[in-house]
Structures are given as C-alpha cells and as structure tokens.
Image (cartoon, rainbow, N blue to C red):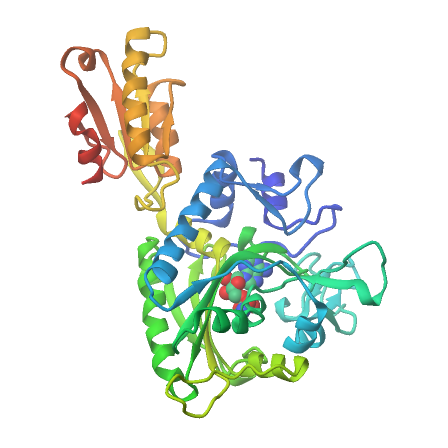
Length: 459
Ligand code: GAP
C-alpha cells in the first residue's frame, strides 16, 4: 500500500477533501499504518467503493476480514445468547417508523457540534479539535460558529418524497429490541430478568470518520437490552461488567490494554444513569471499545407515552405491575476486530530476519490450518496433499490450500494472517504417511501421522 493509499484508508474524503487525519500512535506496539497496510495487503479490509475512488467512512471486508467478523459474532452469540437461559435473539428491520426516533430522543438530540475551518473548509467535530488548531491545515482560531448536526441518515420510504414518508437508517440496534419487547413478553412469558439480543448494522453520518474502521459511517453492533426489576439493576450491572471482561478474554484481547472509564454525569448519553466505557489502547490511542449502560426505564416509558400502549411487566405472583429497567451492554464489531488484531500483532526475529505474525487464538483465526504440497508440479505430492486437505476441511472448515512460491514465502503469508498451523506434504509423506506440522507461534516443526493429524492440531 502506498502512503497515499494509507492516508485514504484512514480518513480522506471521497471527493479529495481532507477528513481529519488519523491520529499517530505513540509508543503503541503496532502503528495504525502497519495495521491498515496488513489488512489491505492480506485481504482483510478494503476501502468501500475503492475502485471508484472510495466513499469516506465505509469499508468492505475481504475474505479474511469477513471471516474474522463472523468469528467475533459467533463467539458473542455463543457467550451471551446460547450461554444464557433468559436471552432471546431478535433480528429487527433497519428501517423503522420515524416515531421510534422521535420517542427515543434521537430525532432531536442525536447531534454532534460541527464547525467549519474558514481557511481550508474542512468540516470538523468541535470536540475533536485540540489547541484551537485545525487538524487538517494547521491554521489557528479560524472556525465558524458551531452548529448542531444530526447524525441519522435520512431517507424516504415509498415513491413519494414528503415529510410523511421520511424514515431513518437506525443509528443503534437497541430500538429494535425496545419496540419488540411487548411481542416477546406476549409470546414467551419470560421471567425477569430476561434479555433481548441483536446483531446488525447501524448507521451514523459521522462528521469526521477516522482512525480506520474505528469511526465509520456504517458499522455493526451487538447489543443486549437486559430487563430487570428497578431495585435490582446494580447486581445485574455488576454481573455484566464481569462478563464483558470474560468475553474480551475469549477473543484474545490483551487485558492489560483494557480500561474501565466511569463516565461522569455531564458526559453520559441522555438516557443513562450510569455508564462504564470499556476503553482499549488502540494504535491511535486510548478510546472507547464498547459501552455498558444503565438505561433506567427511559425507553419503555417513552414508548408507552408515545403509543398509549402499556409497557408494564406483570409479575407472575400477582404483585403490582411495573415498567422494567434496562442494562445495556453495547459492542461494536469493528472496534472489537481492531482490538483483536492489535492484541495479536507480533513481530519477532527468525533466522536473522524480522517476522510479522498475528498471534490469534484458534477461535479467531480466519484460517485454522493451511495445507502445502512441497512442490506443485509433482502429481503424487499434490494428490496426497489434496487428500489431507479434504480430511482437515471436514474437521475445521476453514482450511487454505497454498502451493504458490517457496515454502518460506508460504509460511510468511500464513503467519501474517494468523494461521495457527501449517501442514506440509513431502516425499517422506508418500512413504510413511506422515506430514510436517509447523506451529505459527514457535515455528517448531513436528512429524505427525496423518491419522493423528486432526487430534494433534486440536490439542
Ligand atoms: N445503544 C447504545 C449505543 O449505541 P454508543 O456508545 O453510541 O451506544 C455503542 O455505541 C458502540 O457502538 C460503541 O462502543 C462502539 O463500539 C460502536 N460504535 C459507535 N459508533 C461507531 C462508529 N461510528 N464506528 C464504529 N463503531 C461505532
């Protein structure tokens, strides 16, 4: 990737104007430039609409990036949905009735203060400006008066473009759960506490998308709305706080780089009475990875007021009905993906040469095993290697065939994408049915009998 491409990957607007530049890493193990470059070079993440010059704040996930996202989402579903008895997954529409956003406060309050640099005309988020200096052209004290900019993407539903047909792309998945709370109660009669969980796209017209996929205009959230009795929210909050840490460990995220920030009153979202931001030491600096919020009964009460329909929960013991309160853990898939890659990014020296590799845990690695025939022009070797490939694919699904270039190059490629094991089929394999298994982390090689291969890799 040329340095020009990298700049674009990190935040340049599609029309050639400058978005805020990506922050530089200070003392971080991996720079943002290195991460962007690896992601592009190895097929994880491409700039959205790249071939047409890009569309700022959008990203396309290549074969390995989509697989890594899928691994993160699967792990989340396993941990927070399958692992709980009282969790219900839903999949609500992205387009919602605009009344949803009026009741939730997003139509009037989902704003960021925007200023324009009078010198270079860059539009910037006022709270991103340090030292009163334009981060694009460097001029000082040259900003317009701030104006409130609503971040929801507006569209019209149906052929008539008027106020009645206005709708928005959802800026959070949360509201799909609040609007279906009553449906699930009526269909499933859950006991409190219970949760609704959802994974899906969210859209925000960010004034200055930046720092690679960290702040994008289209991204994916994994959220839970956990309904509790009003006087029991603190216990639930604590439970979730611990579970969030346990989940991050499952993804191989470096716990030394995770920090809790108790968000002060003046900085909390309008709906929250308590929020902990889980921050991470990203290559561009410490920033929010995910949030855990106590949303009180704000949303259900708003729905009740706006629709006239009761959102009360009727306890099965006949005691007085009430509107439940809500604990909301909210995860961004892309920020988790950046944290996973940052934690895994490693450099060492092998035979006097610097090696870059991703030390991903097996559950995160997009490719679990790669199979190499030593030489690609020897049919007896490729035939045997295909047999081994087929066998491993049945067991691990994500197995890569690579017969391109010398073995050293193939190892380097697999190390860089985080493949934990590579299996080479050589001439000895034809004689004694053994293959060489190489471990990514130690680079040690072992001969293993083909019939013991899957078990050996698993263990
Ligand atoms: N329902 C609550 C909610 O949406 P939020 O703090 O605005 O809360 C939750 O967003 C998470 O979504 C963030 O912690 C982050 O992981 C992710 N997120 C938010 N805006 C994002 C953006 N522009 N690009 C990428 N991820 C974003």
